Length: 132
Image (cartoon, rainbow, N blue to C red):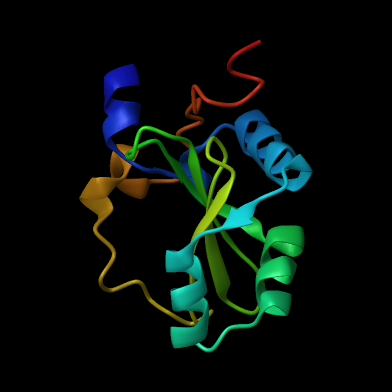
């Protein structure tokens, strides 16, 4: 199962609550740097730095993965602003907007452990709760 976790995303509804809380706490304590790619996407998508700060401050964890060899989180706030951050490189990777009524028709469930089913209580293997 550990190898499987490294090759797929974990949806927050499948993640252990302690892992989710630990990852979000780490994110909120980390000072991030923005990448040129992020800056380009911010402008292209018409989002503001206030939108990003709000998402990082008030957003909820949507997914966790290590597909690029580092721990990445996708967070989304109540307005639909999504931000991808890398906990290891301490970079803000990208941003986009996802409407609250999006039915996720293009979602590739096979990219997620358990096809993104909720309640799997998976450990992320990358938070302080898993590494203690």
